Structure formats: C-alpha cells, structure tokens
Length: 80
Image (tube, rainbow, N blue to C red; front, side, top):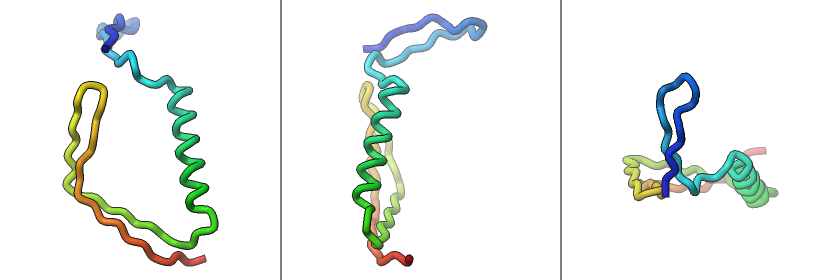
C-alpha cells in the first residue's frame, strides 16, 4: 500500500511513500538493537571475520528488496 502525499511547499513534486515504512525512531531502535547484537557477538573474541561480495543483483518486489550475490567469508586470528 502506498500513500500519495502533496508536494512540499515550493518543490512542485508530490511524493509516494510506503505506508509501512519505519519512522526515524523505529530505524534508530532497530539499528541500536542490531549494533548491540554485533557488540555482544564480538565481545572477548580476537578472531577477525572478513566477508567479500561481488556481482550483486538487487531484486525488488513491492516494499521488499533483496540482494543476491556471490560471497566469500574468511576467519583469521586478530592482533591485540
């Protein structure tokens, strides 16, 4: 579902936004939770995880976008 909004004053352009788009507060909460998860996973680890990707293909279906890509993951010991 999309919502058509009137043009902001002086721009002359209307915008179309998803009615399901997260607010800035939602985005901030989501990113904070994800960062806390990554911090907890990395705590006490000296291992380094390196990921590379190439030839990405972005597929969009309505409000959902996916990236399909070839990738490689390597683990190595870190240095203190």
